[in-house]
Length: 214
Image (tube, rainbow, N blue to C red; front, side, top):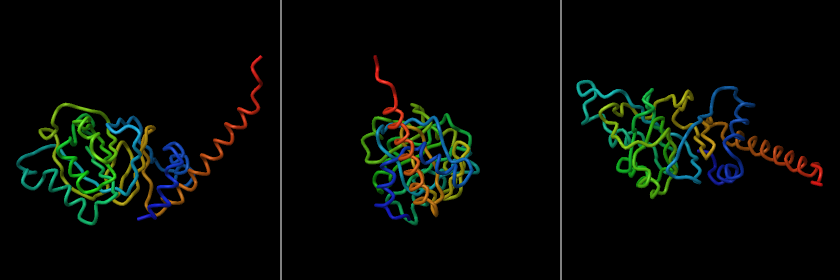
């Protein structure tokens, strides 16, 4: 895991567009996720990913005693939970709930940094009381267990067209989310900081050059 203090310090000075620009200069693959909503506005999500992938529900092939959120969550955190980001991949079921207040209480209890869901979440008011950040594709009132079932943990997944491998870093704020390879996370954030500084200097120069109002 990247040095937490260095990473947090760098991340506190940039936005996801800065990180997406840095990734574009260094990697040239899709890394950004748009159109996210959050029950925890103002909170930044940052940490290495663990994943749970969902498939269409099937009692015969995916019996609930083995394929359920609690079981798959504990499989996902087998090698550590603190500070990680739980990525929930709906595999095309973007309009379905992938979790709610009760299930995501596990995220709070185990000290994860938060959740990124490629689908909807329930119970925004309850989730907002937990000490983590959550980003998803929308809120819903309906349980999703009759449509999708947790299938496997800590495998590469695709979220809104972006590959997320276990250990990749997820960074999300009000603008969206970015997924960053773990080995380059510090260098990406350093480049994002340089981009942010250059753009801030450009804005200041334009302001100073603007003619005074008559």
